[in-house]
Image (cartoon, rainbow, N blue to C red; front, side, top):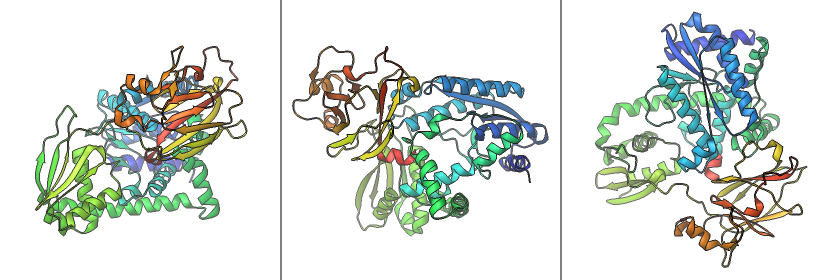
Length: 505
């Protein structure tokens, strides 16, 4: 079967399963310009009349890769216009969004921003679903990432063809539609080639600071060459099997869920505090451990809205507390929630949300070699941080911003071969960006209103000249990239990321 026939056959079947085929519904198609989303759009366009759907193209210009991102946007606009389809294009700054939301992970911020845009477009055109171009390769990589982090059945399921809207939390419409999960990335490229259509290549997919890119470009090829040449298919089978088993358990839980609920507290609309849910403790204890974990995960999701930070070790601790003989007991959970037992009641509740942009422990001093032209990328673990160093130049930079949150661009002395990562020490001084003189670091942290409890945890990037970057706050004036910096000047891009967030990316 030609790839073109396979792709369109799979798309038509997915449209029927999604319940939008032959219903004259509008479907928003998220198109980045890459092979996967381009193939998705071309295939759906070829099926419009046969399947009774209307398409609306949506593209978010992540204003982070400069001219390359602008060219992607122009490509998608031209593609949509050439097909005679309406298109919505918006340009947003992921750095500003990350700062506004005070999110430590750049990837999480970009993801939220993208889904927020797609949801708004879907609501404007009254589309019940948004189609995105995730393939079987993406599914396999997601499952492998979850395995590396440690997961249960929900993580092994990876992605589903139809899923609740991921962000903003709580939207019932649209749903997320992934009709290409049975199609590989190579097949989307071949499909575009068969149709004589070009597509864009995102240079961000080659950056090794993103965990998913390292899994895609290093780990998956290693597993395929050394252990199982069909590792992608094996991981996809695992996802499908896990999905079936999880669906059965969810049906079992649904049958007893209402009997477990004793009380549900209202979740305030201002988001400053969380609600609560009270469950029947003996009823929980009587459940099979697998069902009990699912019930606790569902309770957490209903109170917090987002289950991604809840891990298997949290569920095991909650389950152990339910089964314990303690008349009273409690434990803290991610998201500022607290789970406790009291007699025959188990309560999941939240007070004030935890402090945003928390700082993991650096836990020591780390001497790190500066990347070189022959080895321009370095990724390493420093305590509970993952740190990425990339040697680049002014020409390749896509933003003029020299620092934000946990990412910075620095120009170091040409003979610097080693930098040090550490926490503050007595007598530290710092020349903040924009100042002609230096000041005591403790005074800078105080002026920046850094909580006292956090000041000893703030990582510092230090060279022989002094503190080049107070991570998350400001770089040094002497380390900035000058406006008149020659195009070929070596620039060090540094990215700090909490290690747990890196595993999720």
